[in-house]
Picture 1 (cartoon, helix red, strand yellow):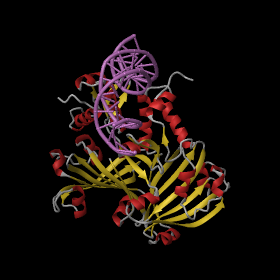
Picture 2 (picture 1 turned 30 degrees about the vertical axis):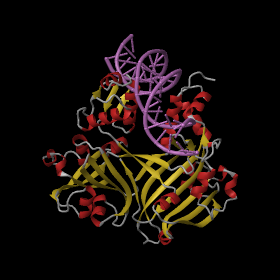
Picture 3 (picture 1 turned 120 degrees about the horizontal axis):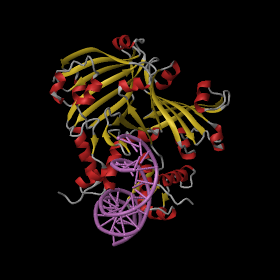
Picture 4 (picture 1 turned 30 degrees about the horizontal axis):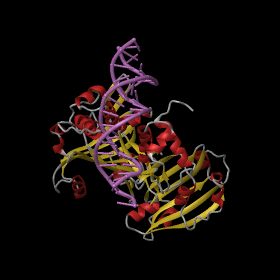
Length: 231
Length: 231
DNA sequence: CAGTGGTCTAGACCACGAT
DNA sequence: TCGTGGTCTAGACCACTGA
């Protein structure tokens, strides 16, 4: 009977009713106004609670059709995409990085296509190794669009990783990311100090600043690296 | 000069100021009341816009300290964790699954520890293969807590995948998920019809219903599987 | 202590879309 | 058409937390 309601208590109570099957999958639940009356709060408060739940996929909301419990909720997991230095230093280790290669050259067509430039157009290629406590942590293979900012030509990336430099100098508006598994090539294996043929967890990321591509990067992590999140 | 404002226009304008470095990393931005005045809208509207941006990690908000642009925004990517049937059928393929093994036995200690039961306590183990157009798609290795519901003993899982059955019969309140790369063991390779030693993208998931663990599952995908998301 | 974000309310109008 | 969610507003009080 507490007088002080909050959108979180509504949120929790609705979740409870979903989890205990008081409201079953596929079923329509009362509308916002009715729930507001039940919980003696404003409709806005109910709206906030339901909106948050809907974002997790557990509720389906449509005007006029009302709110329904999702039949097969698609779980969503949010991962923090690491900024290497932070990730490593938060683990109490020392971060370092080594620039392995820096050149301006034409990328493979697959990369040109991915970032939407003409085949043969030259980009800045950087290869670098990220280290934790002086042990290999991740191998980075990156292509940077030179049109993104003139300053990129002047930067050697020997004292700062491209990762951090880009974050500080070139904003991005959107991007795509994918995770997959790769077999370690002989060089990758040598660089990461693992056996050739090892299974490497790999992250590939493509970022855009409005209409122009900023960078395409592939990060190969050392063996046994895991990417975690909570549901 | 449109009279009709919305939290989205505030949202977009704030994003623009961040991206164009009108407001620089680390800098404090005007408080909600001032922004509301500038945009001639209610403070609630500004609040909604800033709250959404803060959730992406681009803004740091603290009472009294105000709102600042994050120095090193940690990108967040939200992945939809697949329900196999849906994922495959959405790709226009036919879904099938085969139960490969069903037994009640004690799991390795690592699994017992993960789900928090005593070593030696017996669980239901299921191994299954998910197929797309009758070709191997993912190999599932699952442990189910028998205490989760008595019905689980009666279900053979020959006509429905454990994935779907659990979703329909046992709610979960929270969980953990991780992605990593694994080398295909000889059996896994045989089942997935790939070379032993191939790099397999693997998903491991542990779900809870309140204090009790529901299931621990490991999904090994066929070679070249990618998990994608937008930033 | 006082400034700032966090939330709540009552009431209003609007937009979508099922029927 | 008209029920339902989506959003906006003005005003209020509260909860943190920096100075």
